Length: 226
Image (tube, rainbow, N blue to C red; front, side, top):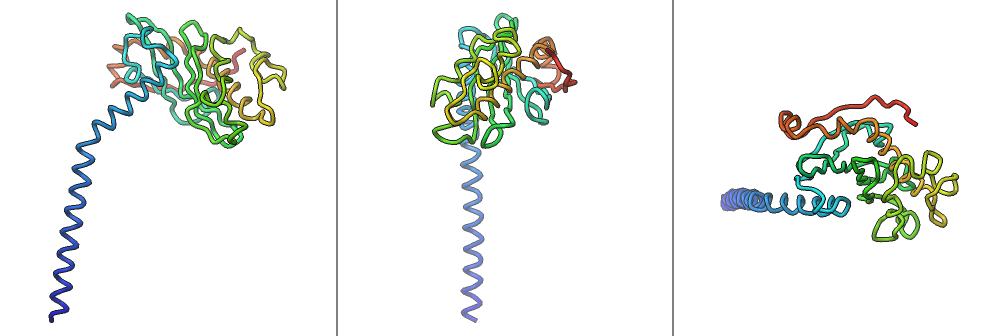
């Protein structure tokens, strides 16, 4: 009888601990979620403004977004977020979350910032699985290679120049590692091609964006261009 009573007491105590623990977790989440969201947004804005300086825009790029889909040009069948930069209501640049699908270690996630005139404001590697000491030189904190895209466009260096030097293009590869830079060069070039075809759609007015809840999606017909 005493054993049954002790077991019942233990079960009740365990139940109480579970309820209290769940409540504490829920309270902690509720108390910190806004702070976490604010921190994530601040980090995103800092990253975006490394590509498009804050003094060149007056809109909230983290909120002024559009979702687009183009497996051929943007490297994934999933919707890709494009952050739009504006000043005085006029388009400044679009920042694509492009995927380079053929990295040596797997897909490489990029931020590719394209100015309204079609020139590249900057490129950054957001996530990759490339070999340390070789392919990871695509990262801005490992080498200055990724800065070589800044100022380039479809016509500079031209279609043939948009390749690594081993393939007859103008972009360096790394000693012992060609696959990673080749994948990034192709992805950046494809992003420029997409931008050329869809610039007006990408910079739909803020009023149109607000009418659709802040974001809207469209798919592109992937046609050969250039």
